[in-house]
Length: 323
Image 1 (spheres, rainbow, N blue to C red):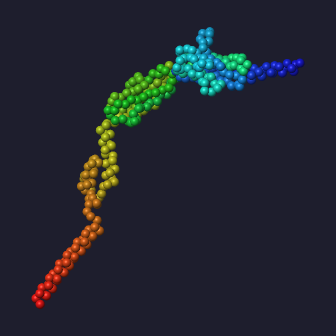
Image 2: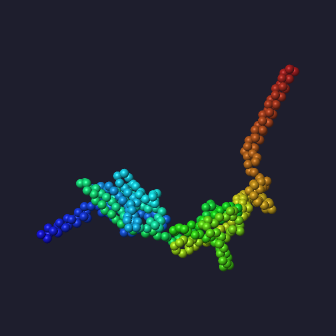
Image 3: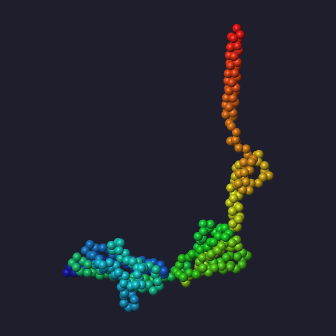
């Protein structure tokens, strides 16, 4: 009798454990303020059970309020507050996790994942899980300094440029820009925004800069110090024109060049080369000259031979007449 009773209890446990779908979900989830969070809710699909209804509810006061409903007609977001930032997975069978974007502090609450299945004999089975959502304000990270210019932190004078200070954390974040002073003097505050704008940059703006970031949570964070250099535009252009000239003067100079001359630009160097160094391509090659001389000699000998033959013929004709 006792053995029979034990088998009946074991059969009931088997039905409860393996006969119906079981929802899996954590007890609590943490999400960043102004960030996104995923609240997991999954189950193992069973052959004899068909999902017909999915609900997500949030605790408001003493009563839960439905914020999402999925039925045979599709997905429905029940509260205007969640429209555009709530999504429930439907791509994987058995995964009905809730994705909530742009978290606000009042999103902290207990969320209920509820799924309804229908069996082959028409009965309905309902299971639910309650998950606590905690929204946290994150402290500010160490800020980084960047510039949108292709010149980096060395720019020509007169250029419009900005330095950007960026940190991660829960907003709002307050930024302050400082210019470092030498001789242990107090740093100069130059801006209270995340962007330090130079319009335009002048040589007096050159120096060492850093920024600080402070949020509602955590301590103030300091960026690394960056060296910002503004160069004279005329000096920059002179350097660009003289660099190739120096290279050319070393590679093309010859012992016959007068060292008292100075090549200051590429154009002057080119003119001096034409004036001093003779062009090896001017004049004819030696074999062409020899060929021309040979042809001239042959023409002279030919003309002399023709004239000689003509004179001999005239003498013979005169002799025959005299006879």
